[in-house]
Length: 413
Image (cartoon, rainbow, N blue to C red; front, side):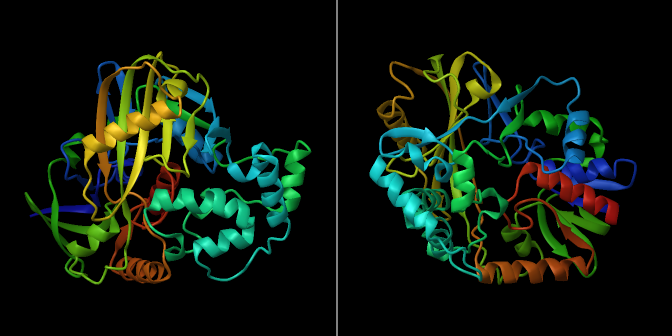
């Protein structure tokens, strides 16, 4: 049996960030995969660099941004001004959709504007669809916010709470839109973002460089946890700990501790198709595009425009229900047809691709799920078990949030 003061489950950005802040202390990181990174890993094929999905760095605090910049010193980093689009009714309009309804046909613009004027900013715990209809008006909600998010979450939006998107849903009222039209553009959380040209995995590599690699145990999967005796059994060994820090998905973790009442933790899966073509991109500026319509994917992003590379390199994200079977070859064929139909490609030839299934992908924020999660996390904290990261806390958050949670916890325990 081995012992560690801090036993960390998961060598993704959350777990490694916590280890970084305890690098001079007694820690062990357990990782079930053969490499570090979790969902912050990258793929390299035929000269293309892809991530698991569109993973870009934007920060809520200057402190976290400075920490990131220190970690990435010497790396090839690009600071990118976001240029996002929405593909609506066979045309590209600027994103966010709700701020750019003036680019719609006149009749639809007036419809959206009138509905927004009469929106009532509701209080209380509402389903997501009702919340956005009453907050943004029926026009904006039904044309974009509801159909797009139903594609993204692979469920009906009356099943999810108003706060499903956390701080990622741009706020808007009629007065704010009028100020926008008068030139007061305001800011969104990712107007600019940072991206390592050699992939998101660069931050993982930087964190590992600060750590003792002998304390990172790869290919070792957690099998059972006794939170009362503070013992973890893995596929290779048994560990005693003083503090357990978990960054693996909560719906998996509850099984390790024998809590099988987590059927309320709903989610979807996402197939990411990373695609590399033989020719440059037709569009030289756009960062990513949202698709609320009939296209198979709900979003595509352009690595070539973001990283400043020559050949068209993009990711397409396709959502599925949690237990739905995914046919990758069929999805690839349909994706290429859709890309050609919307003029993202013409005579381009696909020369390389890398599929990846994220499971779980987007967690479903529901009333019963929030109550379960809050109670479970509170009970675990009382037993010196702490959750950090998007999936461990069962929330919608970004990589910067994971880094901040890791730092805050490291300072606390």
